[in-house]
Each structure stands twice: as structure tokens, then as C-alpha cells.
Length: 218
View 1 (cartoon, rainbow, N blue to C red):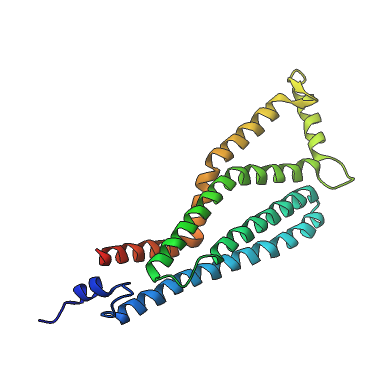
View 2: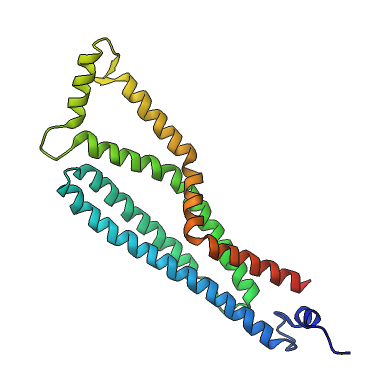
């Protein structure tokens, strides 16, 4: 009796000593390459986008008179670029001569490390972005009037008995600290959501393919 397709797959799938199902192996090998190649392509496009945006936002911030924000965001984006270059080097170290299952497992482990790094980084990223926006508003144009001082003077005039710390209203400090704490707490979730938004479909395909391979290998 002829063997069923499932039996052929189980016996021949990813087995270097058997050639019972070469077409099945070739199919999964090609799918594995396609998934990783697509991820690399998207990852590269995102990095290029960050580079371009970092060099756009700096001059634009001077034009709209919030240079402090532009400078801080420019520094942040270039830090992201450095981190991404390091993680990309780790991706390139994955041995593509492995069989498709081991190759995808290695790639999956790399993506898990990438997600973990992004989650940790996001806890600082979003508070930093808030500080950048705050500084952009507060200090205004370099060499010009400081909007923050104008706001503080108006607030003190309106509430003369408000407690001050180094000339800064205590209520302002409390609000800023609460916002930073909130962003630090939710930053990990935002970072995870942002990653899934960009790469979620690829990650779903990756997990599905690995699950199929493991099922066939039983």
C-alpha cells in the first residue's frame, strides 16, 4: 500500500539520511528563507526610515523653533540606529547552512532576544520622548525667550502661595514625575505593541511553520 502524504512527511522531513520527501523539504527550506528574508528586508527599511527621519527632524525643529526637542530626538534616533546595527550583526551570524527547522529555531531565538531588548529599551524610550517634547516647548528657541519661564511666572502670579523647588512649582514637578512613571510602566507594552504592529504577521507565520515542523517530526 502506498504511504500517505503524512507518513512520507514524517519519515522524510528534515532527515539528512533520507530522501523520501525532497520536495517537501525543499518547500519548507524555501519558506524558511522567504520568512527570514522578508523580515530582514522590513528590518532594513525601518532602520533606513529612522536614519532619514533623524536627519529631517533636526533642521525642521529649528525651523519651527523647537530646536531642543530636535536635538534630543536626533540623539535618540541615532542611538536606536546603533542598537539596531548590533542586533542586525547577530542576525547575520545565524548559519543559513542549517536545515530549515534548526535555521528557523535559531531565527526565532534571535527574535525573542530582539523583543526582550526592545521591551527594556521602551521603558526608557517613551519617557525620553516626553522629556524631549517637554524641553522643546519649555526652552523654545535657542537664544530667545524661554516659554517655560513665562508659564512659571504666570502660574506663580496666579497662585502666589504655591510651593517652589529651585524656583519651579512643586505641582509641575509632581505632574512631570507621574507622567514619566506612567510612561516607564506602560513603555514595555507600547514597545511590544509597536513590534507586533510591524512584524506581527511574520512572527505568526514563523510560529505556525515551526509548529508544523515539530508536528511532522514526531
